[in-house]
Amino acid sequence: MRLACPGLWGFWYHRSMRSEPELVPYAPGRLDGSPILVLAPHPDDEVFGCGGAVTLAGRAGARVRTVILTDGGAQGDPGVRRHEAAEAARRLGIPKPEHWDLADRSLDPSDDRLRERLEALIARVAPAIVLTPSPAEVHPDHRALALLVYRILQRVTPGDRIQAASPALRLAAYEVSAVLRPNLLVDVSEVWEDVLAAAKAYESQVTLLPYVEVLEGVASMRRLTLPASVRRAEAYFVTDLRWIRTHSAAEWAAEQGPSARLEPVREAARLDVVVRTASRPQLLREALQSLAQQLAPPARVIVVDDGTVPATAVCEELRERLSLEVIATGGGAGRSAAAQLGLERASASHVVFLDDDDRFLPEHLLVLGRAVAEGIVLPYTDAVQGIWEPDGEGGLRPVARHRTFGGDFDPRRFRLINHIPLPTVAVPRELALELGGFDRELDLYEDWDLLLRLVRRARPEHLAMITCEYRTVTGSASITAGNPPGSPGQLTALAAVWRRHGLLDDPRALAAGVMALVVERDRQAELVRSLDERLIETAGERDGLRAELSRLSTQRQALLEEAEALRSARDAAAQQLHELRAELVRGRSSLPGKVWRKLAGDGATGGGKRGGEEG
Image 1 (spheres, one colour):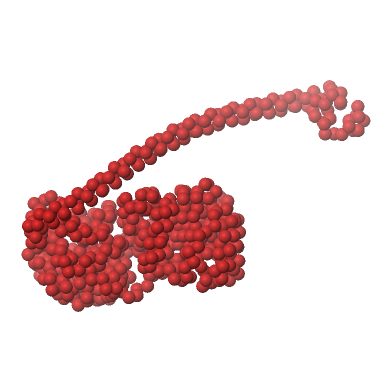
Image 2 (image 1 turned 120 degrees about the horizontal axis):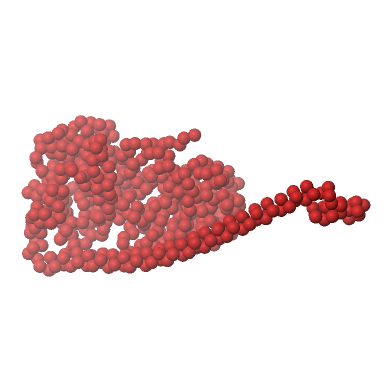
């Protein structure tokens, strides 16, 4: 039987079918590392989801810390379930879990207090691995916990307390009520009976629903791509901090397969989106497709076509999925004029801007819309920078992804250099128009110019989540690419913005901005120095381990050679014995019976009476 299913490249733009080994492992692995922090929404998830891998890790010497967040009261007596959790841990041979006793079905991914509590826990435990339910789960508590943990780790920046405590931290998502698409399968055959015993410790649950049968069935199904020696396996999707920092929660969820909606689209304001495009139909198509994938759809999409190749054909392809309006300038109006046309035509309270070479990730409008609904005037999120190149077949392929934009608002630094890309911002429409909107005299840094005016009236609110991709496409026409850092065009544009906002006339403000950049540079340099020292230390430990491994390999080879010599000696002795016995058989007729039996060994087994009679 061949396993095959549609491939997801990134998440929404898939062009080809992945092969089976790209979708599911064909060799088992392990969850190595210590400490291990297990986060379970309810009493029993820690067993049903990851009991085998945790047991293996504990027996290998890893320190295991388990935290059960809710009391499980929606499906049983909390006191009984707490007792069952302790018994299950005893049967697995791991420490008793810690209980936070939150209300069952109360977990919310937007709960700041719970986020802060979990963040403090992760920093305190400093785990090598954090285990959490998959976002592909069905139960809302499972998905809420998954999102909370992912967003905590996405906020981690170089040098902060979590990164400093656990620089190599990995996040492992496990399955309970819905199968996920794994990148790790763990052979749990040797501890499976203990896992079953721990599952049966939850007597109040297994009498309600066939949890044990489902557990057995899923673990058995996971053997399908593994060697025949594997009798039971558990599935995980494992990522590290580097991957998490450059991928949104929606991308993380999509990599694990079809899932229920990540979170409800409640209390999110509907936002208008203005798309600027100029004779790049393929890029426009992908930009509009990213809008069609939004968890909270835009109220209206206003495409401002400033090129000579009409955008109407591409827009027609998505008109059934989006409320689209096209404004054609005839070409050559410029970036600022195009943005201003869209801003004036929009009608929602807030407008989000998208250039045709950029992308919104699925939760972008949902995150911004919720912030607007909560009364935040100028919210913005984080973006990743994606480097793309033509694939030779009319499409694009990713080259690299970096976390280069975003962070908390710093007014001193912001006056000197823009660190907030326009696509990440929900622009308050009426305020922007009141302040004059986009200045048509600027065609570079026109977005920064508007933001500099906006931040004087409304403080930006940073929402620390990656929700869009600021793309650089090699070979495409771009005014930014045409004016790289340090170029005459860029320096002229910078000076123009500084001059119109008074920075060049305010030495103190200029010095404050420069010093903010210097402080950040020094912080990064210190971090690099610290990481370099750690790298050197790790390299030394690695070399020491390699030397020890070499010594052990040499010792092993000597033992193997000694064993081979012993086997050869044993085989030679056996051959001599065989020849001796053959010689005895040939000479039997010439020997007395008693002598023959003594030599052949029969006297020891034949019994004294028989031997005596023979004598």
